[in-house]
Image (cartoon, rainbow, N blue to C red; front, side, top):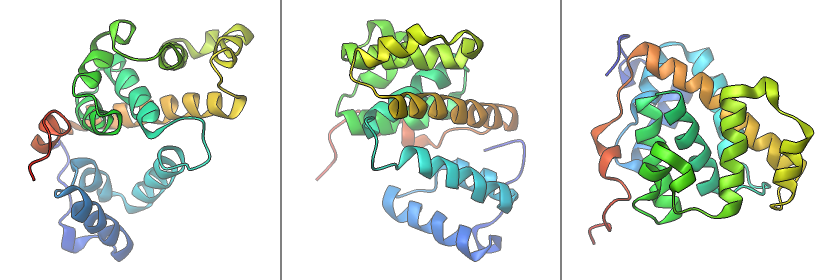
Length: 190
């Protein structure tokens, strides 16, 4: 799974163990990131608190699919296998499009997405690769697609947070769970 051994579930602090079991009950498996980062409980708590503040935010102009699209696209630019596969799976489910994750990971400009999403990804990629070059014109382009300044902050914060996540996953050798590869590609078995 990783260059660093993951702790056993039984050895985790109770709050972390409860969250991991909650995720396992919902997903049917434990995503490797939950155990890989649990080797340092204080960092795990900080990481997932910020993750949840960004990705589970209720009052945002970004849909859950938009957020996962940002993660998948920028993680591909950062060559992060774990995040492309894991968040690509979630993106396919939220958008109900089995091809979209592969499309945005390879070349979002040719993906079957809306002009609004394309503008969002243009900005996310600029934050990812050239944040020092962000200018007022970048904000104006997003405003033209209905994004407000708080939405723009969310796009940048998600991009920046997952830049950290990408680097942690890549240096540690974290691999995607096999379950992620098929999620959202085929209709659920009834």
